[in-house]
Length: 335
Ligand SMILES: [Fe+2]
Image 1 (cartoon, rainbow, N blue to C red):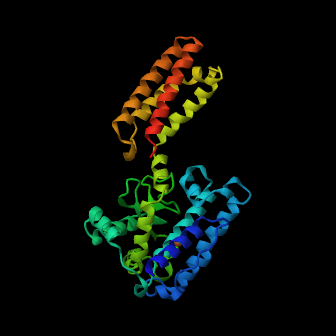
Image 2 (tube, protein in one colour):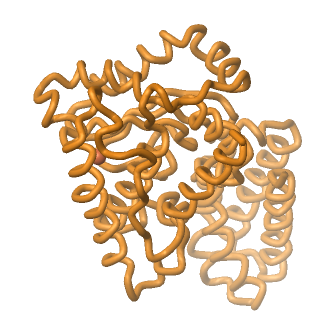
Image 3 (spheres, rainbow, N blue to C red):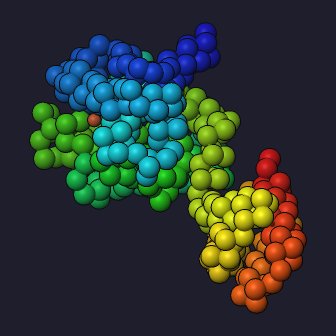
């Protein structure tokens, strides 16, 4: 019974947060059910004015654009490429949908599963230590934002915070991962009842966290392909190299060597940056490092050949070699 309830709930969250046009979710309980920790008026205004505003503005911002076909995850992942309007409102909709999901009055909360309990014990030793870290992350946050408990790409738990309506899925954020618990630290979340006493709100919010739902989020996050996307997205040097390789190799295939002649130095520099970059933990194997070094040597040779005005047939053979090596690296970095 419990697991079917959870799966319906997880489905509803993913539906509201991902289906277009985006729609406002319902709260799990009536507005007054969250008292005394959050008052009914705050809950109502927060949902029907603030959250509804994010939903409306997001739909308006993407209406008639190519973003209309994007999933919520796609909108969030490449936040750096979005307008402020899309970034803030997509974040606002996702973040609040998660927040409503994890809140429940004490009598309606379920228990934490052993899987999550063990993971918390491993990372934070004690539950109190997790609460204190999250409380500190939220309290020290200047201005509006969120405090998070996330699952990182290497499948560990981490406490982080973000500004405004950003969240850890976005590529504009340093500590990335999938959030399983989020605490809204905007004034609109607590001001009517707590005024300037943000610390009291942060202490009391623990009384409303439904750990059964957070546990379900934890398992879902561990199995979510989005984690791999975040990890791959967190290796910008490979994307940078891929770009310059594609833009020089494909013309060279058709005997146009002008892009290669203009950018062989850049390609050499980017291969070195790639070799020296922080390789995502999943790809840290000797074959990857060895092929990255091979790529650096081949790009150096290619650059020297360009500078010596080598024959086109020689340039072509060398860029094919470097291109093949890059494909070997890409192949090694596939699961
Ligand atoms: Fe909010």
